[in-house]
Amino acid sequence: MTTVLMEEMTWPEIQEAIGKGYDTVLLAAASIEQHGPHLPTATDTLVGYALAEEVARRLGNALVAPVLRPGCSRHHMGFPGSLTLRFETFLALLRDYCDSLANTGFRHIVLFASHGGNLDLMTAHLPDIARELVHRCRVHLVGTGPGAEDEVAYLESLGVTREKAGVHAGYGETSMLLAVHPELVHMDKAEAGRDDPAFFAPENLKQSQLTSFIYGIKSQSPNGILGDARGADAEVGRELLRRKADRLAAQIRTVLAASSTSQGKH
View 1 (cartoon, helix red, strand yellow):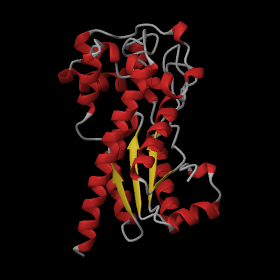
View 2 (cartoon, helix red, strand yellow):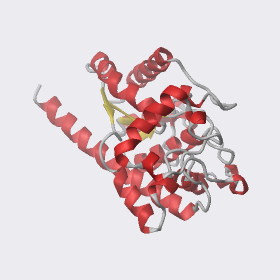
View 3 (tube, helix red, strand yellow):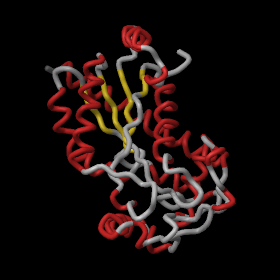
View 4 (cartoon, helix red, strand yellow):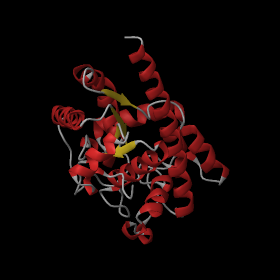
């Protein structure tokens, strides 16, 4: 197929694809929020599309649903242009998305978060949605397990530290945007944000995230960057996206195989 993006397809094309075995649909839960002075507010959405499309191509039997956004971005609301949903709104939207995709005829709905602020809610509440739809399709969540350390190690091999790579609008995320939408990246405005090693130490990162949820990102970084965006590189971004897509595709194959086995036992 020339495209795997459902929003670029007609309904007969989607129906035909499902009939040919495209029984899996990928749904990224993203955001519209500030990403420093150099990246667009659609950054998480654009990364979500890029990853979902790469994963779908690897799987060979998957389509990509329209990326879900906005998301839960209350901690970014100190910056103009950020949008956020109430938790109950986000969950209702997620439930309606899944219900619609099940109605379309997919056997598997696979979700992942391209915005970290969505992940805890998805982890906590997707089992309820999965139970509601279990007689129509299977709902899965991926991207929550180990694997990111591979990307950290890759960047460190290039001399990019954890704190420079960052977790929001730093070197890593900026490199990925340069790879997929260079026209939207303003490298002349790329700068350092919060980049002290203690903040990004693995043993401290969860507490750092919790603090951002309580007090807002602006209290931690006035320019909205958690990391250092300077020197970001498109080739590095392509490699990061490749590694992320490989990891997600492998996880999806595992959960789909396990799902087939469990279905066979009932």
